[in-house]
Amino acid sequence: MIKFDFKKYQYSKLENYNLEEIVEQFKKDNKMAGWYDLDTSCVSEIKKTAQHIRENCDTFIVIGIGGSYLGAKAVIDALTPYFEKNKPEVIFAGYQLSSDYLANLLDYIKDRNVMINVISKSGTTLEPAISFEILLKFMEEKYGKDVVNRIFVTTDANSGTLLDLALQRGFKRFVVPDNIGGRFSVLTPVGLLPIAVAGYDIEALFQGASKAKDDKEYFYYTMLRHTLYEKNKFVESFNVYESKLDSFAEWLKQLFGESQGKEGKGILPISTVNTQDLHSLGQYFQEGKDILFSTTIFASAKCNIELENYHHTLNEVNFLAMQSVAEAHYNGHVPTSIITLDSISEENIGYLIFFFEMSAMLGSYLLDINYYDQPGVNGYKDILHKKIKE
Ligand code: PA5
Image (tube, rainbow, N blue to C red; front, side):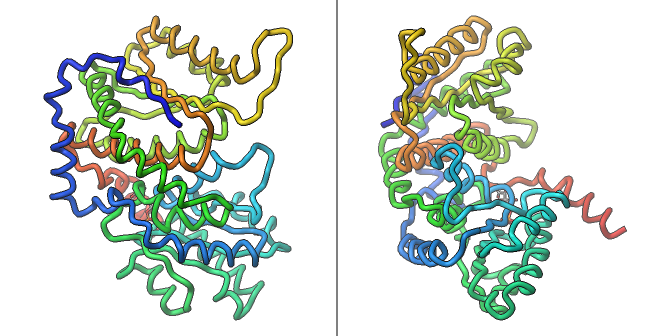
């Protein structure tokens, strides 16, 4: 169960936003609206493959960057108990260019039983391409012909270098649907295969997402963000009070940053993991420049610890800290909306995925920008490719 406190705000322009109409418009005119359908047709094949992978390796490497890995990482990290490794262990690669990371990874997996899922919609992105090239070579040396049974490719159905390679080598393929962009792809094979391999219930993710679709709470959140933006609140901090939700906040940063940060518009998404960041960024929130607002996700802990000397459980103290921070920051001109989860479960995470995806899309329509492209990302890519050639 998830509770929102958005409705307590008064939206003077509520009826003027026409968000229901925007949804209709988006469904009609948008070629990239596939994620809205919550298509479950791939689920049984994903579950079958995931089961095979779970039974036949101890290390599953997921290669991808941006929308091709952040969603899966967000869900897996949120659901995995602290200090526990999934079986098989899921390791992410290809999301940066660190030689040390890749070299240490090769060393770490040399005596392990490895399978790989390489994910790239375009099939041409530099970071995953480099990691895959190196890891494929490692796999060929280690497994010879059996490599064909150990590589799973998730890419476009019709084009790209990765597709060509998969077809040529006979690797098992999953398709990133044409009408779904990277950062909206967690509930497609992009996110679902790694999540299922990690042992989590992907059908429950869809159940939560469908509930979010029906509840339409995203309308309130969208309006709240937009109203604050119009009042010159240009930075939104996503605050979590469980550090295993840190990756979920990273996914949110990408979802909103890439969807809305364009044409000189958009709210800059940042994140804090509390209470640790109260002792660093907290100072700025309380007394810094007046440009911030907060969205807090508080999830009740599964385990509880009695604190005799404090007359509360540890979870209660964490909740009181969250409330105190919201109150203090409000006094420092940083309003906070609070989303409360009764637990971190597949259903609740699925709910939040759809809830935030809708808000990112609707907010972009309100800003009159294209939510599914990211032309600015090419800025660094073009210069880098030129430098590499030189
Ligand atoms: O959200 C997006 O579309 C991007 O972040 C992409 O996911 C990212 O650039 C990776 O692209 P690709 O999957 O083509 O390698």
